[in-house]
Image 1 (cartoon, helix red, strand yellow):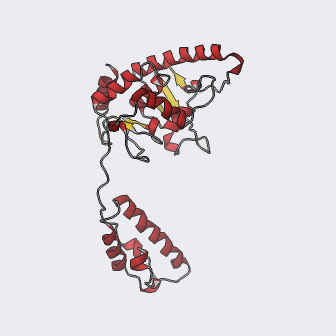
Image 2 (cartoon, rainbow, N blue to C red):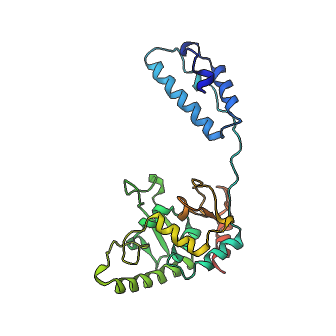
Length: 255
């Protein structure tokens, strides 16, 4: 954009100039990037409007064009998702994996999850916090209560028993943070802990790898790996019927 508009005087800038520039960038940028570019330009010109440097905001008069298609998501098949859960069956992260597949919380949400926010009797988990600078979820709307399938309830119950064994073995070294997913001495997990354990489970086969940063997110993703290796089960459009999604999750977790 700087190459095409950098020398144009602000008062001489037209909506056509902005549209032509965005059209020229459409072959290189995604639709979202073009929208952000137009919005940034609109906000910059708005400052000039406040100072009476321009008569109108020409960037507000046009729409960003469609950009190039994004790269396809790399997803696990149903069979691969079932294989993943089977491979994780004896791992310390088995309940973590089941919860990720079945309910889709982010990695920072799972690592911050506390037992006080888990109700195994009701089959529900409350996501109220995350491992972030603010200790809050990414957005206010991310605070939610998730219903658990039977497999997740069973896995969390077994995980609670294993954690009680860890507490006895650790003795005075145990640090009680009330976390669902913790180290062998009760301390919080970081994303590197999760990645190391995941690599033990899968040996990180090629088909389970994807580019860093491909990180969100339909409810069927495995966000537990959103900052490292992304492993995802087939995604669904936002309009997917709940019954259809529940049926697929049942098929994934029943084997």
